[in-house]
Length: 353
Image (cartoon, rainbow, N blue to C red; front, side, top):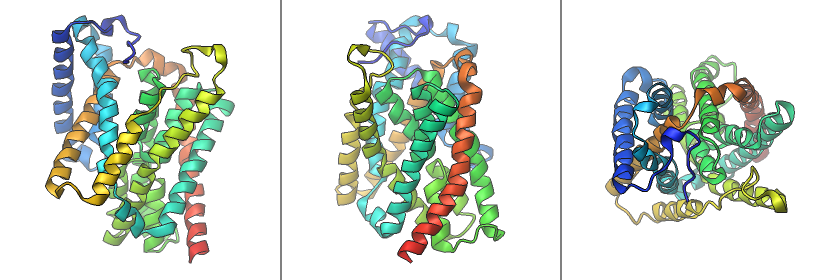
């Protein structure tokens, strides 16, 4: 069941018409966001519509939230919760087992080591060092470790965390992912990072946050590096489901018996099994390529709607409370992705030589 947003202006109602109006409002807003993200100045930075959506939604939700009828709240809430789960499941059509097999053990090992280490470092630094709450630390770590905004959305849906916590995690992905996307190719082409084509692909695909950022950075190195980097990145995307299930299991076991619906509660991410099923469908090539491409385009739009709705429920006053600490966690993780990611890449190449 969808949880009601904390803002009274968005309290869910039972009005079917209001729910539909709210969904339509978010869809129209997301359509405008998609057009905005397609502008060359934004697209050239590798900033996806998902990221533009949460920023634009947050600006609207804070500046003009009183202009939204209360009856539309259920539709906004559905877009941020129910539609989100469906969209994350369909994200599985972007991954195939054949592509992952192309880079073999080297790509899988880099992905496993980067994802595991980044999650552990993010949780430790966020919760122990910078005293962030569990959800904010986990969302920031997941966004850095796995697949950027899409991972934040998946974990947000399972954790049922407050919207402003997702906004902070996405902000970290935007800032440090964009900086890395611009600097990595310069460092590789200048010879500062001694990587061959395979190494460059492993490093870029294993450490950059967003899929778009991986493609944008690797395309400035070589076509072969872009191919390798994209496959490694999709291997990290594939790890979203097992990581999410393991985290759900761990948090559920750590929850105290009398905790009720407190901070320890986590929803069983059934949509994760839908993700795996659609990975299998894509691997078996059951659907024509044109159908898969069309569904992926619709899925991107649905994810943009979800991010936009989350933005509308986000309050800047809540972000200010933990913003600097969340940003510091993202900075530490980005330093690890650069230094640790490079060490992992070189180590795996040497091991599998």
